[in-house]
Length: 521
Image (cartoon, rainbow, N blue to C red; front, side, top):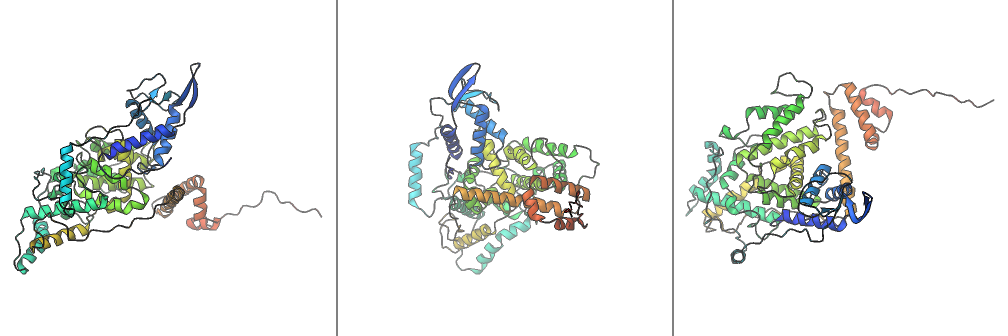
């Protein structure tokens, strides 16, 4: 099946749904089945559908290899509910589908969803505004402002001075300078970040991806300036912060087994109870960390999660995460750091009987990071794809981009000197450039995917080898298990018995032959 990526644009989730349903309908093998002494043609079992769709999703760049079999079953239930499929008797509308031999078929009617269409007058006005000034897509000066919610946005005096020091210096040293108000500064921040974002996404307009009124400059400014040495947002209003008991539980698992904040004696299953406590808190939040209003924006970023667009996706997410309310950004930073450490910790006990640690992290927290206010059929799969990427690149994505601060300061300088009339006039500061890699074939992609997976497994082996806190007996046990699971990678690391013995500081034991055959005289 052709692996196509749905490009950024409005209603991307609906377009993805249509692509998946079309591919499933076109590619799912149909054959005759016998059930209850009757023969049915052009149908398939639920188990066959799970197998085929599971393979399709994992090899589709819009969803990726993190898709689980259970998520595939959930999507098939959505298919049954939305009449993409029906049972052999023509029944649909429920979600009664399991991984078994129950028979299903395709209905005659098309299952595609229609894309919402804006009012013609709005489209006309949009095109007129766009054609008036290509270099100034957003005239932000006259936009109505939304009053920010009280999210601990009390800027410290030091940060206020740092943000305005260059402005004040230029005002004193320049002749005929223009006075800049706080509103002008905020508009420049809003205009700059939206212009960069539009350039990265490569769309003609952001109006159907994000409403400029949703961008609150105070949030961006706060997230850029009020950070710790590790780049984590520091809240002035501690009532918006994570509760102390949640922070303690997160530190406990992030630093397992060396915890500085949990000195209480543990018991069998203790780490599972701590994990459930953390999960319950985040799952009970009133809205996802990326907020409902930015759902369409982040879903569009998923279109950039291709191997040759990784750097572009990182930069786009870096800007989008600056738009979040500071408490949300702080929670997201701490959550990503925790689940990333847990998934890489070879000493962490198994947290689930049937699911690996990384899959458990993604499955548990994906919906509290990204979901739509109204139920969307692909929510879980899209959220899992995004959380997987955030886990792998959270240090870059959630750091402060220095180029944005420099661009704003330069733009304010031009505005103050009279080179531009309004804060929202054309951006003079050069935009960052991106190098797009050459598109590769499906075979090359598969080879690179295998190579990347092997590198990650080899890194896991090195973590076991270099773990000094691991008892010698336990290390031998883990290495023996690793050798059994991945013999080629193990042999590449330890090609001889001597190299393996050198790790433990002992000499290899050479076994004497059991039977010595002598030539007859």
